[in-house]
Image (cartoon, rainbow over all chains, first blue to last red; front, side, top):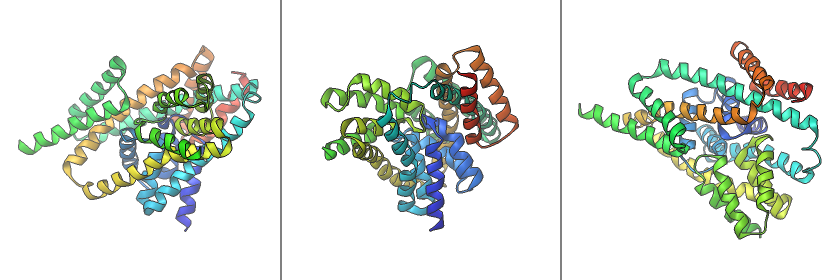
Length: 183
Length: 171
């Protein structure tokens, strides 16, 4: 029973302290489920993220379902999902009810301007950490470097959506494993 | 009414691949077919949803549902949005458990990692574009980035600190 309660608390916190899109929550969810609770490893979390990018639905919900299911099966998945959406429902309902009145307060706007800067810095640190980790772990640096450059080109030059970038990477990885088999 | 709301958001959850921002075109589609909210209200929602706690897509669903039918509308729309995820992810998890040790799956997942890194870089640049609008803001960003690099505190600590910084400096 205790683990359900921990799942609810952890994902409620994740939902409460995530601002913006799904990727922005990666540092927060990592601090909670990998560093603090040690429920899953960082590699597993990144696999969940990669899969969540190319499966339908909101990324944070998909990651929460993955984590909850890994720990406690179907009920764990449902509990994590409900916990991660609860802060949104509460906060947005309050804001929707009071919209116009509070969002125009200068102090509220300033606080959010500060939070957005913090999100950028969190993401930058995450990028540095992941880049170092991937470089050390990679069993095929040339292939993975190529995938990285290809992904950046797809995003920068062709404005590709996340799903196509993940599909490209998965296809290259799959082709490489066949090549390895027949060598 | 609640049934239609649940069904419409269930469809969005089923087809929006790639996260919260992808739900926005689907929500604009709703403005053409229902009188739940106007495109102008939707545009306002995006700014609010981006700067309040919670993932963008969930916030948008709660907001849209609230505009359409009130408090219960927000809850029903959000549950509709996440229901397909629960089914799909549980199916995928089962598949992963069976094949976790297969070489081809290992290759696919390790190849996805550099792509995820590129996605995070791309998303960060987009966040930076709307967040770092002045030299002062860029300066605060550099200070925060350096602090985070050397003092690994919880992100929540830095978010609260940045909110206070924003209020004090009147950003």
